[in-house]
Length: 267
Image (cartoon, rainbow, N blue to C red; front, top):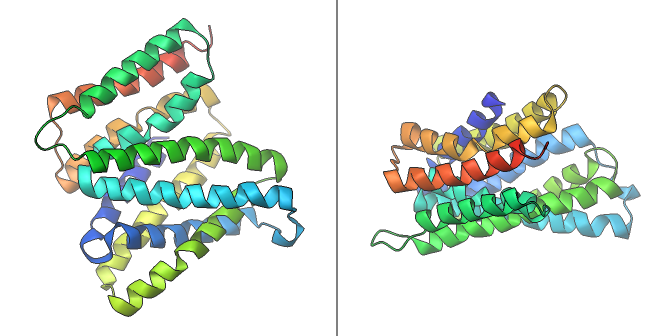
């Protein structure tokens, strides 16, 4: 779980090093290609056997998958890795809290909201467009979870997710072609983007598959809440993006809200 989390955030940090050459759009395009190669190889979707009822959630999932990564990476470019990942984490947290009617979860929602207000408080250096893009990524992540459930019910194994990754890669194919023709990227920038795809898509996906065979889902979900902290640390170490006390307090509030909700869910 530690390796998966660090790999995911390190991949995002390395991918941002290619922004000056490829831009967030180019980096996301390469990441989608890598994700498609890995997931199609693992899932081996039988596309010809898909029915119309199976295809529509797959296409929506592909659209959400691409939008989620593009909005997140653009947000990282504008507001930094730690803040962007923390705001994106509100997506799965909202799904978890919305499905509950317990008082403790209502309190967790208030704590998380306080963290969001702290992170998005008005100040001269605030980039509200970047924050808005991170919140769009959060909405996409929530939609991604819900659509994955639908796809999982209608299509066996990982075929649905693999098909969605393939379609999403095809959607970004024109981006790669235009990028190569108009602004030929450097080998270093492409290497950064490929590394982002491997570390943020391939490694976490395979590591999570292995982890979930040995670790209970609640424990896995609890560790997922540490990702915003890992993002803040990786952003500081790799990119030199330091966060102030209020930002760490906001991150801590959101992480604590998720942790409390999971720890009390067994009661």
